[in-house]
Image (spheres, rainbow, N blue to C red):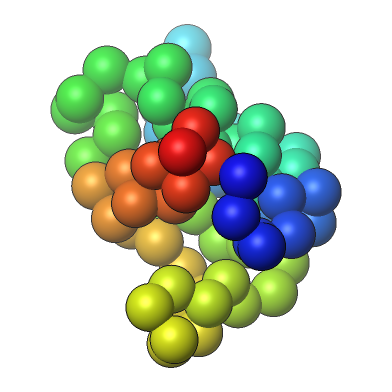
Length: 78
């Protein structure tokens, strides 16, 4: 894994769960794994908000939306 603090809190939102949009509060690693398990349509709608900004290519990113989360997933699994 990279130098990202995967255990920090994160919220995975805008994901329909049984007819309700209930945000999932967990750690960053588990939120990314939950996003990977979603179908493509739900992945595109999802918003991931880590507890603190994550540095990506030298820039702090506070919110990841849709397929931008895939970049985090690549760092988690890479």
